[in-house]
Length: 399
Image (cartoon, rainbow, N blue to C red; front, side):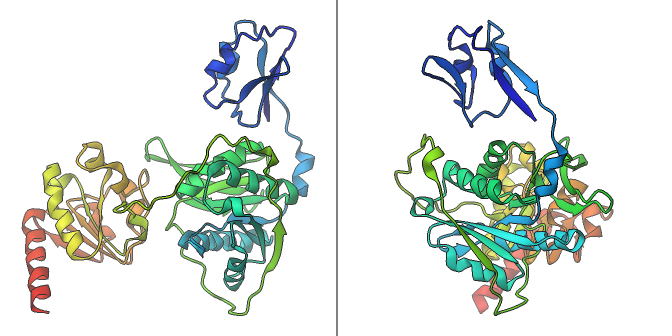
């Protein structure tokens, strides 16, 4: 564990460290320099100080503390009074670890009027649910959610904490890890338990998706990871009468700095949500030109689906990043995935190969995409897709 040490006898309060800090973590209180809980230990303040009044000091981790941490937790994400699909996916990932670790699985519900959702988690296998129910938590904001989660973790000391790598999870979970001074592996594509050490093995792509890193957190607890949606199936209902132990926690907002004020909430239409789409039509390098994505979009619209893309198409600037499928994009699991002009590099396959039914269109009969496809069409995209569009329109017109 590291800390930023302040030598007050050297500090002249020149404010250069304050100006340099990107997290507003340094303040002057009662004539002395103070580092608050927003500090991420980046060390920029140390480099900026002309008087060497700041020093980043590594402190040893005390392994004796680790024995007090028990339990596998997951953040049960909810929206508009309903549990999100990813809440059940995270529950399933936790249950997978329970088989190898033998520790209890607990969900964490944060929000307003969310206590009733605990029963749904119990029906699917959660042993316990911690509920932080407060009117101020009705709409997601990073700071209060991070504070609430950190308070519950610090009180009950779980060994493992999991969350989905959604917009919400990616936003506040890193702040939780920083508050409780532990590590976090973001955007995992797999997790497991090492049979010898019983440590959490966290797997994620690195070096632009060209390698898969296996990460462990030996000296700090809890072990924290965010997991890409659609990696795990949703936990099924196993007991309709399941009633987990529910522990209600009081949210203490006294530690909030309140730098953000919610002034309103507005629903934005037409957001690309590949991870919820049942049909995805994706284009790759074989589309040749950004204007040809109009063909992909037309087919997707006819099928009531969403438009995806390979990394090559996104890197070429043909379509925005939110459409990217693969290790460095979205992991998807639609009922039907149609790959148009995508060769099937391993990075792309990792993001879509669990789709229920895969249709590949490529003029190269040896393209790797055909190895995972349920139906492969060897042909020119600009002949096959227009013919498919025409046929669908005929059927819709006749039906």
